[in-house]
Image (cartoon, rainbow, N blue to C red; front, top):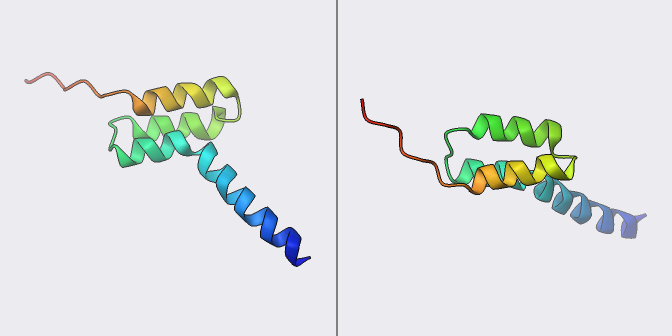
Length: 68
């Protein structure tokens, strides 16, 4: 019982962090579209394409807003 617990929790935690890596990157970099990236990652992250799109979007440099 104890061995299963020791193996399960680190694997679960690592998987959770890996799944939400695009969201974590977006939050750390203070992206303008953080909410959109988190929602894309949450709902389409289970597909490899959705996860990669969210990761690229989170890693992309924001263009400066035009001055008014």
